[in-house]
Amino acid sequence: MPFIRVCAYADVPEGEARKIDAEPEAVALYKVGGEIFATQDRCTHGDWSLADGYLDGEVVECTLHWAKFCVRTGRALAAPAWEPLKTFPVRIEGEDVLIDFDGGAALAE
Image (cartoon, rainbow, N blue to C red):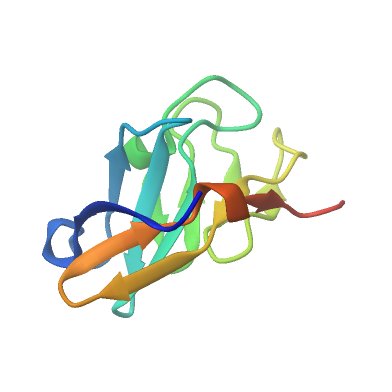
């Protein structure tokens, strides 16, 4: 599957997250320092949207049980989550954000 347009770059506010309902799975986009990162939207500990979490720099905190993840790498940073998030390659073309869903991967822990 090639890169797919998911939204406009301007649709993701700096320092915030945005949920994108997409197939094959929902993703969370984060804009940090002008750079866009994409992870699976669901926390690996509890079935909860990370786009509804708190973003502090490159760290998103799940509001359900306070697990923390690095949005750049997907690495789990705080219990109760131990399993990393799947991350997706992102490309910006003009004003569009594109994601490669087939290129998604989780870190080996």
